[in-house]
Image (tube, rainbow, N blue to C red; front, side, top):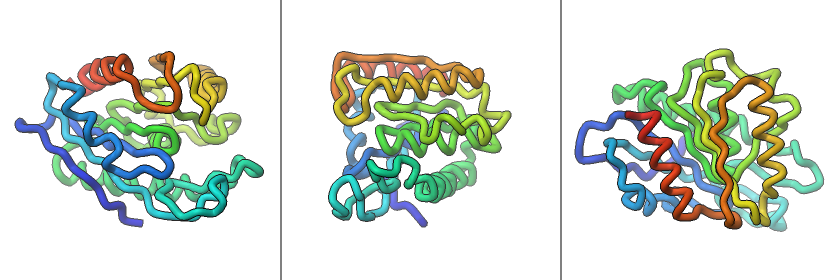
Length: 216
């Protein structure tokens, strides 16, 4: 599965790359407009891939861009598709490596479904990422994630942010995911905001700070 992407390069030589995965039903353009809003003081390259189109059970089988299927009656049914999507994102990581940007200068970011895939790949990677940015999302199969995480990923900085009024992914699910990670000795920078299932201005300030910290 080869992913089409939108790529934004800084005026100067990039100090690193952010690969940012969108949520269910959106596409790579979803967070494209956020780049200038971040007003970054560090030159960072952004890659926004488009998820493939597939039927989504929770939406009546309608086809839309999705990193994996969501079936409310079978919460773990998307496991294989998550693995496939993670493998496709790994190809984007490999492409950045070929451009001269090592994995430890790459941040994997994702919103909602995209965050699930970003965490899946980042926690199991053979090489340490610069950081993982998990926005309004959760760890898939958190009860068993400890059996698959890689040793090198333990020191990866993780930024997790969630809205306290999120109607799509309740914040309790994100808190449970955070606790699963901290129990495995991951260092999680946890933020919560008075919002629903989206990104707010205060969160953008915190995202800017995280990216500049891990990619300076």
